[in-house]
Image 1 (cartoon, rainbow, N blue to C red):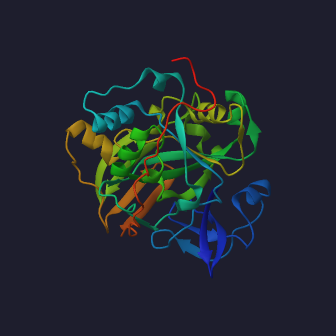
Image 2 (spheres, helix red, strand yellow; image 1 turned 60 degrees about the vertical axis):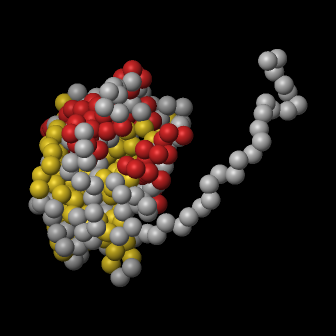
Image 3 (cartoon, rainbow, N blue to C red; image 1 turned 90 degrees about the vertical axis):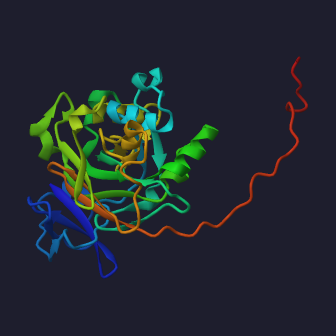
Length: 318
């Protein structure tokens, strides 16, 4: 099944996407994708929606968003954009690293995405994300596979200058990723992709274009871990729950920072207002967004320096 969502008279409405991936019909009010998956005979016979002109919502209500980094080519290029001689740390190969990003900033297809306030190096990231369909805790890889409901395209918008600065503190990324995460245009259930799944990997072609110019293409099969392995790791000692989003991380060539790392210069340039970014993934459609004006920066003061020393009353033998 293929689902989308859209606001109709201020009310979110679920729809069933057609096989053309650019149109679909609405279900009755009050349903979400998980409702329909549990009752698949529910019919979508409402108004026709054309995705090419309509602004869509994320295809489902988002609970959390974990974003991994699983493409070796991207990792090398992105690290080179920070330091030309920086290699992949050994720890990258040991386990699939991820961070949490802001579920309240999720946007959909054809939505305007503002530049992060104060950023001059705004960037896209081409990803695919898995959607959790049922709650689970401390799952094995085989168990984790059963908790994946389906997949959608994800754009992890990134303010590289903000990200670079804040990560020197040893935390983050945070505000460098906080402005928006775009999801859609549709949510495709796992069964629709069974024929192109091998050893847990989805052999789907992916590409990104800016203002109609294709910049890069890759295959989702080049992930270093498959999605079931990501879910298993994410659930280690904790819960993944229905509606959670787990991003694949950026594909090879799937962001500007990677180009900057390989080129040694900001070529292509950072995104600007009115740029149109489209991520296309085989069988999942095309997710398009327009870059908008950033919000003003409300200044806060620098940290107040305070006197400090060893904790009291404990004083170690120095």
